[in-house]
Length: 101
Image (cartoon, rainbow, N blue to C red):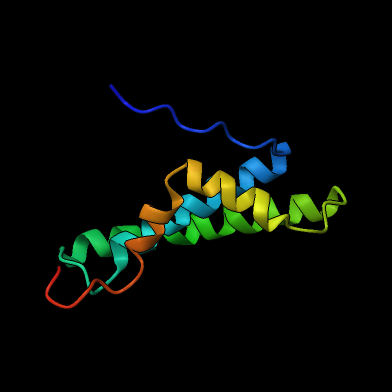
């Protein structure tokens, strides 16, 4: 049985979109990370998809700005990222410890 996750903090629709697009981009960067094992084709496909995800991330931020959401509430967004496993997902972007591939 899975442990109960804390609830997501209250987010605007635009903030939710930002978090989703950010995590998708992070996942792709993790697949591209040259310090991780894998093949070049997998990295190439992830890099191609990253272009589209970067545009979607830009669009989410632009929409927030257009709606007058001019500040990112870091504490709230960080809580949302943690609930959505953002720490593990972002760790794949970093260099692995020596000897771990």
